[in-house]
Image (cartoon, rainbow, N blue to C red; front, side, top):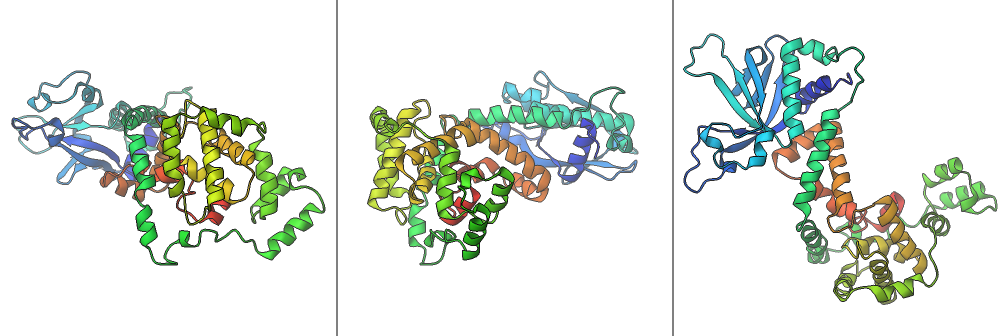
Length: 414
């Protein structure tokens, strides 16, 4: 596929579709209606590659591309009464498509209003459709639209849309993200307890930790008396792919997460606020009580208190308890458990657990783009049902799957 932005947009809308809202301008808002009442969600598609190719806007509304006369973007409120209740920020995301229906007598020009998620989406639609009108579908798909000498900018409109969408999601998460996170991480514990023995993977929480004897033999042959941390990267990578025996996991993870001062944990516990301490104490009994005994719960409590005192701007976020739990259950020392939690939240998942979950929202947006291109059918179904992928992925990203997957699978993924 061409790297030309117009070609990428056309390929995308032909194969995956382009989500937007159709503004039904003829519908009455009524006295108490809102602008959303006349917006119907739809998915635009371009069908066909011949001169009779069509833009399918909605069921029952299909426009031949050759009949389109103009595609207009807006900066101000349109004159139509349908927009009298529309928020001001919607106008920059609005486009008007005008066309003539060949062989028909029309009392007024045919046109439709389309409202997109972002300004980048609206601009990509207008520029892409204008390129098709000017150069034809075949030339656009072949990437023949770009001026000579122009540097290719793959998916430039998608990057702009991603940045704009990220800011929108970030604003939406403020004051809401942590409540949703809390409900997800607290709300299903009773259901798990009610499930019959053996019904779920978590009823055998330690499954997968016991390595096959052949794995131990392969590691012993590869090490030949060396420490696991002394192996070359290529050789170590090959061994990791077959599984890490627990004793070598202790050595490797300890080296990877780095060390902290021995007195750090005990000192930092004293800096935790009363409010955060109360939340931690509430979450400890909910952190897989089937896997943690009282001494382990006390260790987990100390690690979480220390981390909250170590990073006052981040404090404590639900999900951290499951991440730290993995180190505790695998038998790491208090210092390594604390260092591991710091390493994951600072280096591997930066800003995932901040006040606005900014890092998570950003990576969830990246995941959405990947699903859109690699799993278009699933993306289309989620989009049709208005199910944000960021909500589905929340639990797995924030706790790195430690809440729902068996411990052996979590250790292997990590």
